[in-house]
Structure formats: C-alpha cells, structure tokens
Image (tube, rainbow, N blue to C red):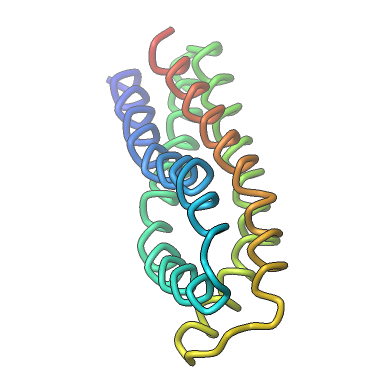
Length: 157
C-alpha cells in the first residue's frame, strides 16, 4: 500500500511539475523570441501582465510538484525501493535548484516588470531586465525537464 502511495505521489509530482516545465519551455521557445521584436512599452506591458498571472497561479502546481516529489522519495525509501527513492530525490534536488534560480533571479525581475506594467510606466532598463530574465529561462526549462525525467524514472523502475 505504501508503494502505491509512493507511485501516486510520483505521478502527482509529474503532473504538478509538468505545468511549470511547459510554461518555462513555452517562454524559452516562443515568448522570448516574440518579445525581442516589440518596443519597450509593449515589452513592459506584456511581460508585466504575464508575470502578474504567472506569479499568482504557477506556485500551486510548482509546490505540489515539489511536495509530492519529497513524499514520493520518503515513501519509496520507507518501502525499501531505493532506486526509486534516489530518482525521486534527484528530482526534488533539481526542483530545489530551479526554485533558487527563480527566487534569486526571475522573481525580482518579474516584480519590477509587473509593477511597471501596473503603473503604466516604461522602464529605462526594460531590455536589460528582459535580457537577464531570458538568460535564465533555458536553464529553468532544462532543470524542470531533468526533474520530470528523474521522477518518470522513479515511477517506472
């Protein structure tokens, strides 16, 4: 029964993390190049509003993905499924690295762009902020992909 719970937690982690992964991949592959061709006012308005909704709505699936990864690792360990537990721990560790990058780099940029968009201001450093945000999005998407792959391994072995 605990093994079934571990697998259910792994599946829940995959589902939660997949939402964030898909968003990061979309941003890296579609949003980043699309924003390169707009003026600064549009850049601030679009990114500010995207981050307004993203920063409000995406923490829930992200937290679910992380908590479920931790639960899965613990449950697999308790049931003696060490390979599964290690794979789940790898997933959790990678998700925690992603969280650090998000909190230290992306979130402060998001906040500045959201505030400017809400106030209707064009930031003089909008392109620099976007460049710094763009610089980390591929790494974020890659980390989410690695975490998902590790959790898929935990679920299938």
